[in-house]
Image 1 (cartoon, rainbow, N blue to C red):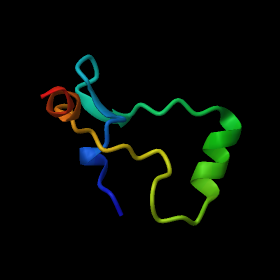
Image 2: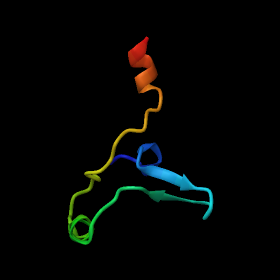
Image 3: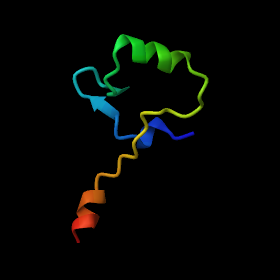
Length: 57
């Protein structure tokens, strides 16, 4: 299982001073996501900020 800490969708909100998942789900998607029995998040995306820079080199 991937950790939310390394996910690109896991962002820090400076106003509330907390971390949250930034995936925009509608009501039906949220219901399916919370009701699923999968162990891995289908919205996980590795947050490597330097991937583009390495690709350009």
